[in-house]
Length: 581
Image 1 (cartoon, rainbow, N blue to C red):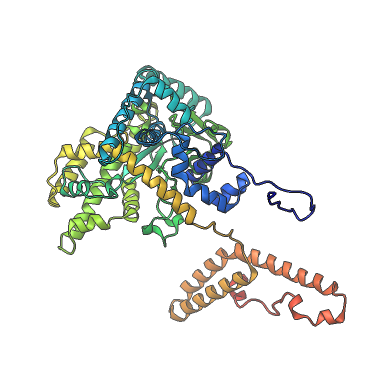
Image 2: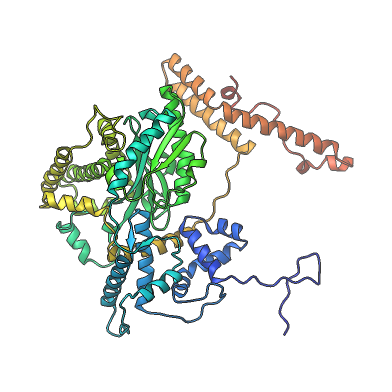
């Protein structure tokens, strides 16, 4: 039987063959989804239907497993290739390498080999007796070269040996930066730095009974739930930027009915909770630039900004060309821990404040024996964490935000002190006191270990949890329908105005202070002018459409057809009183 042909509706002899999708295309679709793109937008960009994209994403695990098992990238079907623990180990190893790269941590061949062997051994221990675990794995250099090709890690820098902080570059750069600042005439108000940091937002010290119970319980570990924050401010210390928060779920249950724009953080999501290049560009253009412009106008200083960044992969090297008023300068590689301002105590103190605030909140709700600490911790969700993150960020002092620039820009901070060991130690002591008030029996060393764990490389258990989060994110995005684009209609605008007018009438009935009501009424009316202009334009367009329809009617019979005419209000909308000033 000849193959079916699909007519294009114009030429009966023309057929259209079904479009084959190569493994390379499938991997690209999966990567785009992980970056937060919806199935509909991916389909439009690549020329596939939404259902096709959905089918590929459903098979994500199988596709990626076979791609890493030597499947040719120009193949269009999956054939049986390597299987077993090595494939699973390589999948987790890729996440670890990408995470190290995201955190701008140098990677050496020996580190990759050591991590690969560790993952392999841990995965081997999780296998049941009936499974074949007889494969030998030594993580040879030959394996690494083949793995690098399979995983398409061409842009990942793997060094021959372990890298260390570049003390020489860190020593030389402040003078180079001083020349840039002098040449550009930048004030301390106009010089900014931001940096990413991970936060396990629901993690207790390891020795607490809550942490021990969670480790022994099967299933998802809440303490492994990680988010990424972008924190920063200027050298004068008087502008702390609104935190950018990247989570692994776009719409978690605790935020289902919350308008994300109303949160005290800039909310973004992708499968691994990383600040990707696309997320950073969006933050740079749509949040950072407008915020610093508003700040400069308020201080009556020129809108020209110097932004200092490290070399993390989420910071595109094209940023310097994206805004005419923002100059971007990158710090030398491997100098972050030595001279980057946000790493000189800002992030560490913020995390200590977050832990102290969370513990204090637990004390408040448990002191009357209304709920137990275990119940509080179980109910503590991402919405609670966001509030504590915002409050903890507010707690960082302006003087400290200035002082941390001392190493990089000593000319700005001669009279200011940064964070002292005593200040951070006092916060830790407060955390210990509050923790023991909760009968957690923790020491200062436990708190130090917990705060340090946020910046450590991902453990094998962390990697397994992160992979599950990635799969869940893909399924969540697949289930979410692409929302219809927002647009105004004349009818809905009129309804909105009517509701506002009714609300104002209710306030007028109750308010004994006529002057106060009139002031509010004028403010509301003035604020609605932009929507009134849109309504008037739509009304004018509606009238013109009706006139055109009237003059084009060919017969009297057509004039009686009321459905062919667009109704025109014979009088102003019921809200015209509030809209006309």
